[in-house]
Image (cartoon, rainbow, N blue to C red):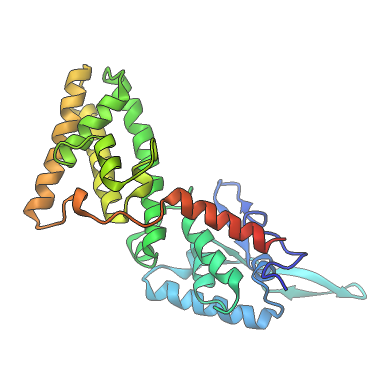
Length: 276
């Protein structure tokens, strides 16, 4: 029997969007997708998830919102049915505390940790993620950061963006360009280097990206030459801070065995397979 039964929907299908644009899931619908037949057992998992939330110094009421409703039980009579509006983080904690024998639980853990498009998580929540989940989270932030940096760089006069970004890499990686980094990592032609970084390396690059954008704005940089120089200096300064603190240089950090593209593809394949 499939982990996702024939009548169930996927995690994405049961997602709701509130008037404020924030996504949420109903516990009753999630229960079905996770193949729990009895509410009593699933409610026990929810209570464990609430406890894990509180133990992380996160207010459970912000993530598990009561959404009880009246349902008809026959002869016109109605009774209250317990339900919750769950945040993505709440769903993740439920998956973490679910029946580990169910394959769909593992899929749920990955899905709710990885899909962080709109949800910002705090330090406590972040610490609960696996290394691959941290990679997805940091990569999402670098994508947003680079998009914003490119707009700022354009306003500063940058036209050759590959060259501009290489100046930043050269500062942070002791003279290495993006191509040099890709070759060292053994990547295929035009394979994304950021998709092949661990969370610590991504954090270093995110800091480079954000600090460069701030500097371009603060100093009102107006020429491509100055923008490139600024990006190089920021990268070099971050490298010096890492060295001063006795940290591992970015080029010495291990390259993950699988790229984020591979992990994403495998996860989609697993969801599709179990949803047949």
